[in-house]
Amino acid sequence: MQDLLARAEKIGALLKARGETVAVVESSAGGLISAALLSVPGASVFFQGGGVIYTRIARTALLGITNAEMEGVRSSSEPYARLLARTARHRLNATWGIAETGAAGPMGNSYGDAAGHSCLAVVGAVERVITLETGSGDRVANMQAFGGRLLDLFTEVLDAQK
Image (cartoon, rainbow, N blue to C red):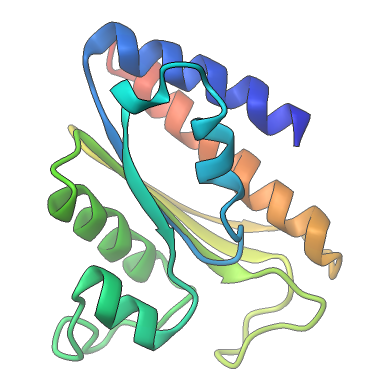
């Protein structure tokens, strides 16, 4: 967790300096991303909100994503990660939306993805979506890897927007 906190401090400083905000959706990271960002003193200036969207019920109830919006999109995919980030950004009126969706393990998911698979999205002035494959079935290590890689991706995007 300590490595996530250091990454979040850098993001918090960048967002505060720019007057920008972020909304977070996570699934397999289980709240670690939001926890890291909220550990930054003054997080209320940049953290609009976030949620662990782990099920279809949560997706519908908390984000309002309809079955029609999910047409042709499967969970644990890059298009789904992008949809989550776009939706959170819009619903929470944030400058940036970031999202993570995947299979932490120790087994893969029902879509055929192996444990250690995660799709990560950053949506704002630009959009970046990537897939991470850790090759590991270690659930906790994957959760931390997913959170760390999304925070790194967000930092890369923010640094490129200077």
